[in-house]
Structures are given as C-alpha cells and as structure tokens.
Length: 304
Image (cartoon, rainbow, N blue to C red):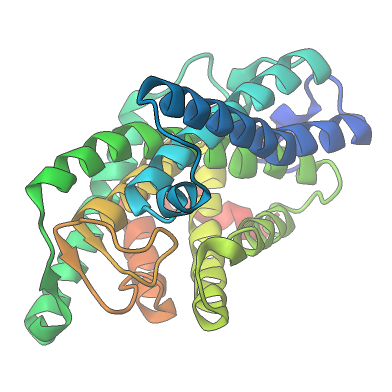
C-alpha cells in the first residue's frame, strides 16, 4: 500500500536504504566524480602537449578553461563520470535496479522525453519571439558558422548527459531518498528544488547573477519536480531539461550565463530565461500543456 499515493516515490523502499549508502553515493557522484574528471582532463592536456610537441604553458591552460565551448566538453566529461558513479552506487550499494530511479515501469518511455522537450521548445521559442517584437534591440545576432557547428555537436552530446544525470539524481535518487524521511510529497518537492537551486550558485560570475540563477533554478526545480511526481517518472522532466539547456546555449544565450560568450545564434546582455515572471508564467503554461487532461495528477501532490 502506498503511503504517498505517488508510486514513483514508493520506489525508494526498494533495495537497501541506510543513510550511509546515500552519503557515499552523493560524495562519489558529485565530489569524487569532479576530481576524477579533473584528473582525466590533466591526462588529456598532457597527451595533447606530447602529440603536438608543445611546451607546458600555464597561461594556455587558463585560456583553454575560459573558452566557453571547451567548458561544454568539460560538462559532458564530468557528468558522464557522475552518471557512472551513480549507476554503480545504485546497483552495488543500494541493490536497486537503475530503472527504479526513472519510472515505475520496466523501460524508459522515450515518447515522454520527446513530449517534454517539444512542449518546452514551443513555449520558450514563443516567448523569445514575443520578446523580440517587444524589444528587438535586446537581441544581437552572433552566428559564426565555424564555431557554431562545433557548439551544436558538443551540445548534442554534453547536455543530454548532463540534464539526464541531474534529473535521475535530483528528481529520481534524491526525491525518493527524501521521501523516506518526509512523507508528504509537497515537502519532498520543496526540499529537492531547494537543494537543486543552491548547487547552481556557482553557475555565474557575479553575486547578483548567482542570486538570479538560484531563484530561477528553484522555480525550474519545482516545475520539474511537479512533472515527475504527476507523471510517476522523470522522462518528461528530462526532455524539458535537455531542450532548455540546448536552447539557452545554442539558440539564444547570454554572456552573463554560466558558460560565458557562446557562439549561439542570438545573444542578449542579460540572461533572458532567469526572470521569475517569465519562468512562473512559462511554468504554468507547461504544466497545463503536459497535463491538460490529467490535472488531478498534479493536484494530488499537494493534497497528500
């Protein structure tokens, strides 16, 4: 019998769930994975120096780390390692099937990923078009074909890995773990969204931008959490997350964002997607579109 009336959260009861298992998994997936990624990066740099017969240059390394496109490569590398650690910890430490962090079925629902991605793409593109008609001077074309195709390829590889890991980890692993302590889904939702947002503090170069990003990611975390709990799976949220990161990097980016000056099609002086008003309205529309005939699945999150 379900305590929460949300089957996805009941997956937390599977396997072994001692507190130290969660602690080890979090440390390995977030901290140790970053250390391993850094070590691998060092190996790649050394190999590159040997292949191209270059002398070691610290300034060159700093320049490389400040290159936005290279940072996307690092995103893909780091989160790939995080994914491996999370998978191993789930299987070995928790004795759970990895699919239990994704949904209550026995397979990934790819159509749900496409549905979430398509809905969010339509919404943010419509808002972008409206913003352009209201204030066209805020948009600047920055298209550079030579760099753009590299950006597209890296984004198509890195962001599905990064966004998928964050959904499995935050909306799957952590939300299920939190539900073992806090039985009400609304508390699970709030705590997971707060954790998700605070870990994005370092995504910007200024304090003001960091505050803005934390506020926006809290709203995004709430929306994605609602989608997961209402649909009993992370796939639609995964689709939203992937297309969001792709859009704000490849289509319309901001130098003030976490990755800096990307060769996207359009750029703005301020991040166009961190406004709480924009996100709040877009979130309402997204929830309505995804659950137009299943609004009761959304309401049950707040009734239990």
